[in-house]
Length: 305
Image (cartoon, rainbow, N blue to C red; front, side, top):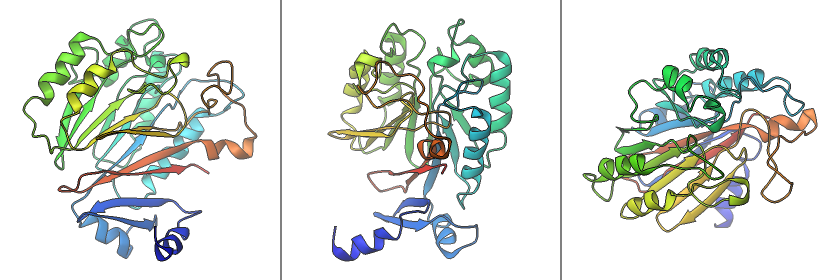
């Protein structure tokens, strides 16, 4: 980074920054009200922009967050205040804490407040307690295959939503049927097609001791190797983490509910109590931007604080 770039980037600190890939260049600006020059330029650029939220845990009651519905409401408000209308919002799992019908209905109702064209979801392990995800699929599984996996295309990007939380012992698990779906789904795509994969549990070995990995993910990773740009977005770990392996970049998202300890810094991944004034600094949303013809996606994480 040149000195000029450093000075320019230093102005970002303290504000919510929106990144958009357009014409091969990453453009940045502080998020502002609709109608600003920067927003108007971005909206006419033809870029794809979407938002990832994760781990709302609606129904959780504990000192780590006494009002998870309130913090999720703030996250929704932050999405709506970004200054642009996301093409879609993806919730990457643990929508609820105990997978009750009332909790699913509550989070569904809350997400109707998102100002976006479409809302997508994948289930977390908390969304399948006691029924292998049946209640989740009744509300959120319309049009999906198998245990709730699916794919779609928009703006030249191919998206795959995977379920790795239903048949787990210690690690996440995809299963033969779902891996076969991915194989057939990718078979006809050119190798320069940008691929984005959503899952709840990481598809890389972030910290297997705590179950933060997927035991058969390498079979899917092998199918993704021929593509020039692959981005895998997950939740589950309640903290930001990025890892790159060749053409594949993995991004773990933060939560809108409560923080978990960093790998190895506690006996188990249990909800962490932080001072009330610091809680929102551990919670947030993620915006992702892409323009057709570019290779990589621009990822920006924003805290609720």
